[in-house]
Image (cartoon, rainbow over all chains, first blue to last red; front, side):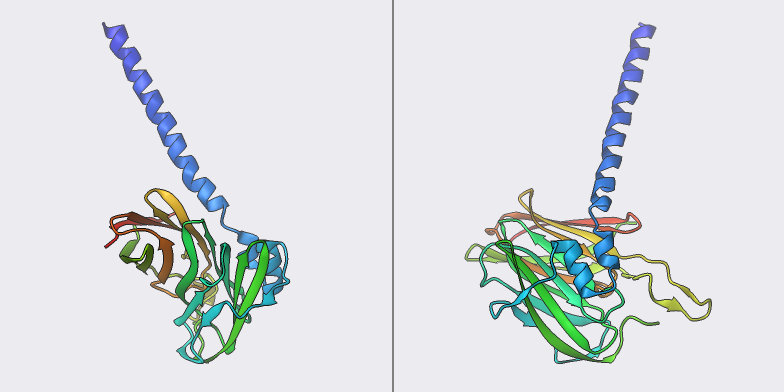
Length: 155
Length: 103
């Protein structure tokens, strides 16, 4: 009887250990997917070629990039990228050209999502904001200049 | 420490707008502390995932250049009553998630 309960105990802890291992593996894979090279790139071209394998994007009128003409506070610049007019949007990236690390964020979409993103970004100085949309294997872009009166990257 | 999230969502004609407001410092690791001349350590959300009824719809990667207390809005194909889950991870391993039933 004692032997049986002992076995049961070891089996249970064994199962728990496996579960913990599996649990630990999940966040590791999630962290590994963060594209470190792209986010640490110093130029928009480098960032784009790291994320999409190419930095050649054609300007498209179908992307609606909404950004303020003048941002009073560069630390909070509202940006909206609306590519819902384009079918099969796979990914949207937002870049701030002159930031120390230009790539701000990159969204990838499954079929159940629509190519639309609205967020707020930090900008160090007056510069172009570039929205890149990947649809059907092609890179499209839209850009707009935002005048920044108070930078949002310094201390 | 879990990350606090406020989320709203509304479906109209099969398309839902999901908005989330997250409480997070989003420290990029570049900003200098002028007293010590060292940068503040980086702490920013790097992974964002939005699912509709358990299937992944949007997967985003962020850098420290997303504003502090980030706001994000996306559009997904979902009916009212569908369940939307947003989950976040930051570079130090902190996590947060929020569930919402669409109106």
